Each structure stands twice: as C-alpha cells, then as structure tokens.
Length: 554
Image (cartoon, rainbow, N blue to C red; front, side, top):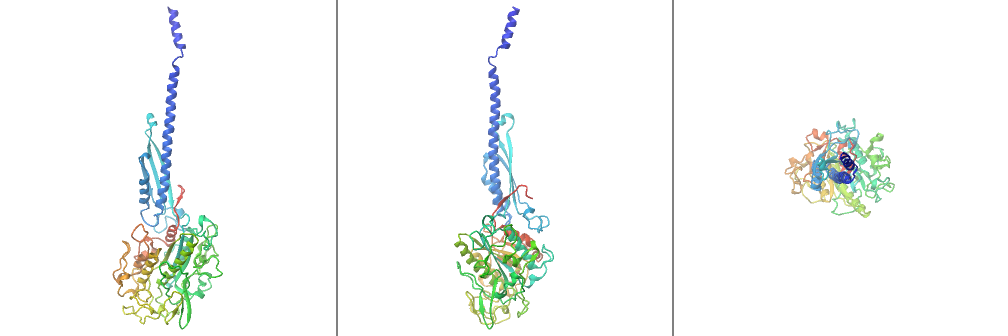
C-alpha cells in the first residue's frame, strides 16, 4: 500500500501533460503586451508626427504676421485648432512670439533694441495625452508626446520690385541722437537701415549668386530715389562720392496712367536756362551693365551674402561692414531763392511709381509675377512754396507738365495751380497743399497695386505750412481706424501725413506698413516705434518667405 502511494506521487510529478497550456498562456500574455505596446506606440508616433506637421505649419502661418500686426499668435492658434481632431487626444498648445537675437540686426540685441524684445518669431509647442488601447491593461491609460516648431520670415525673397525714396533735404544732414550708430547724421543712419534690409533679402532665386536685374533669376529688384531732385549731370556724385550735387527746383513728373508701362526717363524742362533733373539715384546708362533700363538692380549682395562694394546702389548707401559711408548726401540749396523751405515729395512718388510700372512690365516679360512696393523715408514735412518750382514758362520733356510760378508768395485759396493745369487748389501739381498732394500721390500708387511703406523719421506733430487753405473733396482721407480722417486743413500735420500715406496689410483696415522711429516718438508721433535698423529689418522680412528655425535658436 505504501509502495503504491509513492508510485502515484512519482507519476504525478513526472507527468508533463498540460504544462504547455501554462507556457502558451504566459506566452500569449507577453505577445499581447508586445503587440499592445507596438500598436499604442505606433499610434503615439503617428500622433506625434501629426503634431509636428501641425506645429510647423502653424508656426509658418503665424510668422507671416509677426512683423505686420499683433495677431501672429492667434493666427498660429487658429491653425492648430482647425487642423487637429479628437484622434490626437487632449492637445495643449503653448504659442509664443519671442524675440530671437539671431534675427536682430547687429549691433542691436533683443535686450537693447527699441522697443526692447520686439517679437520676431513664432514658437509653437504642442503636447498631447494620447489614449492607449492595450497598454491600459497594464495601468498606462495615456502616452504623452510633444512637438515644437519655431518660424520667422527672412527666408528666400519673393518677387518684388522696390523703389526706396529717401529724404535728402537739409535736415537729414544733422546728427541723429537716437541712431544706433553713434555720431551718424540722419542721412547716414537711414542709409545704414537700408543696408540692414538689403542684407536680409537675397535677390537671387534659390539663393543663387551673381544674378542681374536683366535675368529671370533676379527676384528682388531695387531702385533708389531721393528728393530734392538733382541735375542728371551731377547724379553720379551721389554714388561716386565726387562732390555734392546742387538741388534743382522741383520737377513735376506727369502722373503715370493706370497700367502704363512707359519706361522711366528723367523729366526734362527747358526755360531761360536749360536743365534736366532726376529723382532717381540709380539711373540706367550704357556703361551700367547691372542696372536695367528702368534703373533697378539686383547686384547688391556678393556670393558670400555681404554687400557688394562695386554695386552702384551700395556705393550710394554705404557699407557699414567695411566702414564705408554712403555717397548720397543732402544736395546744396544755397542758390535757392528761399533756402528755409525745401521739401516737396509728391513728384518723387509719381516718378517712382512710373519706374515701378515699367519694371513690372519688364519682369512679367521675363516670366516673373512680381509685386511693386515703395519705401518712403521722411519726416513728412512738405513745405515748398512756389519759388521751389520752375520760375519760367517751360516746355516739359516726355510726360512732363508746362509750369510757371503760381503768381503769389502766400498760401491762400486764391493762388492758382501751376500753369497748364486747370484743377482745384492744392491738387497736383501745385505750390499749395504740399502735404495733401503727398497723401494723394501715395494713395494713387496704392490704387495702382503698389504697397506703400511709410517710415516716419523725425516726424513732427505740427507743420505742413502750405496746407492751410480749403480742402478739396479729393483730399479727405478716411481709410481705416488708424488712419486719421482729414476733415480740415488744421489736421494736416507731418505725423498724420506719414500715417495716411501707409498701406494697410489687406488683413486689417489700418496701415500696418507705418513705422515711427524714436525721434518721431519724442515728437508725439507713434505707432510701431523702433530704431531704424529694426524698422528696416522688419520691412525686409515682409519681402521674404517664412522659414523654420532650429528649436535651439535664441
């Protein structure tokens, strides 16, 4: 009996039947765990990939607005909201608009720029708690994933034809205490700002080197204008540093017809003493192979991304990296009958618009769908009386007007328009209402499709002394909430003039292309107040495509 009992125990211990079921059960649990981990991890990876794509796209979408209005974060946020679904789980966005030093033009930094720490990028951080399917059996109900993207402008240039109009009146020869480059005159400070813009916009397609404005590879074309106008025979002094040109009385180019593509030529006038004058500092001539027939160039950068010292445009504005000052300087007005008043810029705007329309036709012929823009830098103080215009009955050159003195030295409603034009008082061309004529010239350019940037540099809250007559109905400006509606001549002051010249973005009803520097702010003229370097850096960014930056960018 005892023997049989031992035999039964031994047989039970030695019997291996059914043990595979245990191993299979354990193996199934392991396989299910691995499969669950793989499925849940794969789902989390797909969600993370979707988050990264959304973050990238949202940052790029927001970057397009970071320099033009304050809604960059909301634009990015709306993009996130519209492009994520419940399948991504609970997504928590964190969207900011930081200031990155890598995007601030030297020598400024985010900390010492004006204003301090201006937003210049969009950072989108998305985190999601992704629900699990199988891993919850092991106590893991969610998996946390995240994605980050930083974007700003300053990528490759979009196709643009840009006319820069720089005030070169006598006040620009004085020292600017607010200039980032200590000891610079206002003219030099403005030209350094233009350098900053050019350095931020590569003119050639795909970043190629060595494109010329006559080539289809040139996507960004620039021409420089200034006022007062100077004799054609002396304009080379403004890019060869051979002397100071003499300011001519203001020529009055004809308003270009809508859609006209006539090439720009300096407007010639002949009176008792024959003369020709031009507002364009980068003119075309037979020996200037890198400037096209309309006076635009794309040769301002070298293959290494530095300013090209042999470019006429760079010679005119200078090259701060080589400590080379620009040749352009306020022309001499010592021979003018009234040297106290010297500013009138409606004619320069019409001249620039004429050149832009011709350039747009040329770029279209090359297969480039380019937009036009004017960057206007001035205090907005137009105050030239009749004696700054041609004094003799004159025969204009191509597209010009026959002009004489208005016949009075007073700014009154009884003063006639300049001879040859039978229009209302203060309507171009006239020696009255100089500031109002500037507003209408800028808005004419906008109606022709040109984006108008107005940079108020030392703009005052009073002035425009030739505008104290009766306003014609065509001079009333009511184009948005930031624009100042002008209903009486007393409201026509330099700051308002600059504000009402600026274009809206198209996204909003007020002119986000209106900038003010610190000296303007000191005079009570404010909007997006920055130093000139930062202003031109911001303007340059609007001509480029948005781009992603490294997440480590600071």
